[in-house]
Structure formats: C-alpha cells, structure tokens
Image (cartoon, rainbow over all chains, first blue to last red):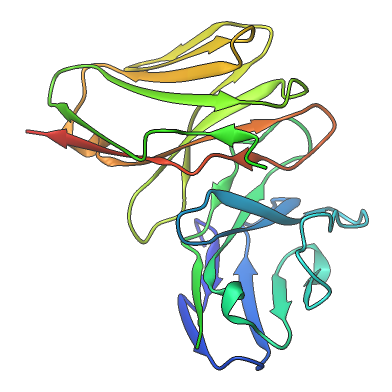
Length: 115
Length: 112
C-alpha cells in the first residue's frame, strides 16, 4: 500500500487479556518505530527496528510489552496481561533509511481501550 | 520529566493572520527539532524540521525559528488557512539516538 497500515483501528479488551497490534510499513522502508499517545500526553517512544540490527527496546514501559518484526517488514506489538494504564493510541511509523530522517510516515494508529 | 513542552494546549487564529506555536525544551543535548501536524483519526504528518546549526528554516507558509540559548523554538504559519486547523506537535532528537521526544501538542483552530 501507499502508506503505513495499522490494524485493528480500534480494540477494546478486558483487563488481564493479551492483545496484538499489527503494523504494515511502507514497502522498502527499513526503519520502523512504535510510539503511543496516552490521553493528554505527547507521543511516547516504545521501540525502534532498523534492518537486521537488534531493536532499540529502551522505551518499552514494562516486560509485558514486546514487539517483533518479521522479514524486515510487518511488525507486531504484543501487550500481555493488559492494564487500564495501557489504554492509548498506538502509532507505528516507518522511514526509508537510518539516520537523521526523522520525517517518517505514521500510520493512523490503533486505539486500545482496556476495560 | 517532560523534556519537550508545549505550554499552550490550544490556540485560535483568524484566517489570513499569523499563527505562532511555541515549544520549549530542557535537554541541551537535543540538536534536531521537528514539527508534526495531526488531523483527527490520522497519524501525525511531518511538517518541517531544523538542525541546531541553524536558527531559521522556511518552507512556503511555514517557518521554524530556533533560539538555542533560550531552548525555545516556534513555528510560524502565515497566512493561516482553515486547512491548518489541526494539532501540532513539537519533537526533538539528539545525535546518535533514533527516537524522537514529543511535546503534548497544541490544537490550532483557524477561524474563517
């Protein structure tokens, strides 16, 4: 597709359940990022993938969060045993290269609500 | 600790006038700054950026000014148009680090 695609667009889950959020980056983009935006907050960095390098996981808030990127393309963010504070919009972005190319392209996000 | 701050959550400007959005940062290691624009139900889109070696960058109706001594940057939009109504995020990065640190955003409303 032409842009970054995220699915689902909305997800309501019960506290304690696991969720998987998917991101399809722009074809050929080697860099992929996950951010989240909680209510009233700025975008918070979660994790960064670049090619075959080890991901930068420094923004993951707890060990309940994990992410993988298969084949250098699609990425899945998994949240185990969801808590109410995990409710946020989760945004994925991709970029064609590493380095000072921060003008990357965001998807529309997945709005996660934990009830 | 909010390293990038946008102290005005909202701003209303008459169509045709200048819109000025402000951003302050605390981390002196930041050396690259960006503005993103976000419409409802869409992801943020990159607008304009500036490196710390410059104090001004211009792109059409959009100009970003950087005052390193004050740790302050601003985005000027002139003339403002109704399509500029959106939430604007300021973001910052430091060399060697791929992540961006975002402010909380300013909702700009252009009044026709």
